Image (cartoon, rainbow, N blue to C red; front, side, top):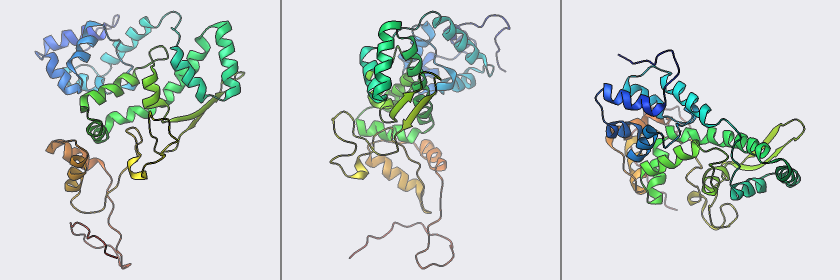
Length: 301
């Protein structure tokens, strides 16, 4: 049985979570485990210290709705109302470092005009363009929440935990022009946006996305310089993966363990089912037949 909000003014997200946890006799720790977030994240959300994330930029509301047996749109309605109350009035200006880095990605002539207009008229116009750039980037980053194996592999490679890395993604997805940091730009924006421009008369925004070329972060090198192609790929550079017929789960487990991450049997089964399969192409040109599970032999010249 689900609980729905009354038709009056929506309550705050924290109030709704606190009430439903009490009504269904579940703990905050249990909910945090279902959401795959640290307990402190949930505590801040319930207490009101953290602004509720935008429903289209997170996966926690679907999980909350199922766990707490809420109405389908209860949390989204609360979040939209609460965020609308918090954003009334003039938006704060982006940090100077953020503004500088984003203007460096802009076409030079347009960047100079935007900076002059910011000095004369304030930051509202530039903040609006930054928000539109964020919409582009956050839409792509949001898909990472549905790709658990990529985050787990990246966490193992970085020496951090899956929960910490997932939290980084959630934090960026809720970033706005005034909360965006230079770390956010380095981690998420710069690997995706190569150049942007805007027609100041019509407001049409032009964004040149980077290809999926690998990029080395934080070292001041040209993309991919000095490293083999197979090792240059950063955490957020994702490309779909397909596998030949065979014991794919065993191959997947080996790959994960080589990267220092560990998946449970249930996670491994779920991830293996998520990747498209294709049958191995026969070498002798004959029609495909039943394939055996085997490890390819090494070639000897």
